[in-house]
Image (cartoon, rainbow, N blue to C red):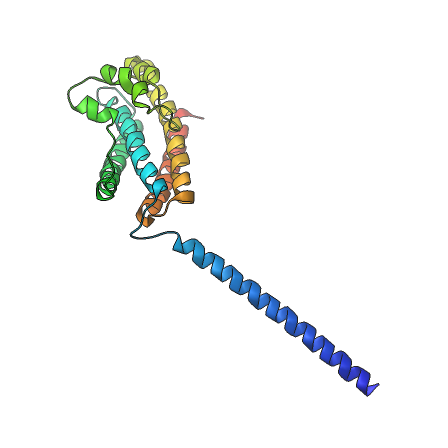
Length: 213
């Protein structure tokens, strides 16, 4: 009986050791996976996803700022006017940041509809060329017709139309930022994507509240 008990004890000990070793290897494997995932984000290196994010988001932000420009001569509720200024204050500097990245990377900074308007052309002229510039196929981007409709809307319709279009525009920006979070390599760009997601989700909630939806 004593010999049988010793054999059984050794077997149980060996089994326990095997489980412990297996758990340790699994834990090491998880650590390696996490480290590899973190290593993909770099403070110095960038990839094609970062270039696409910066280029497309500059264009996307520029249209949002053009929509904000259309509020300047309109009678708006104070909350809507404040929101428009918040969008201008946030997205203008973000455009400059992303343009600096592209310049540093040796990439072209895209021409935008806002560049065109600020160079002396009116919004109608720019809207006529938007489709040719290939900008309206990004998530949430307004078409030339939609921008013209917003610009020409009577005061009674403008505010709700602007809010509805900006909600859609923000949702597109969030989609683009989520892609950068998944595929980007440059840490500052990935971080900016997260900031865009957080800020624009909050603004969407505000806009939906203002619309009463």
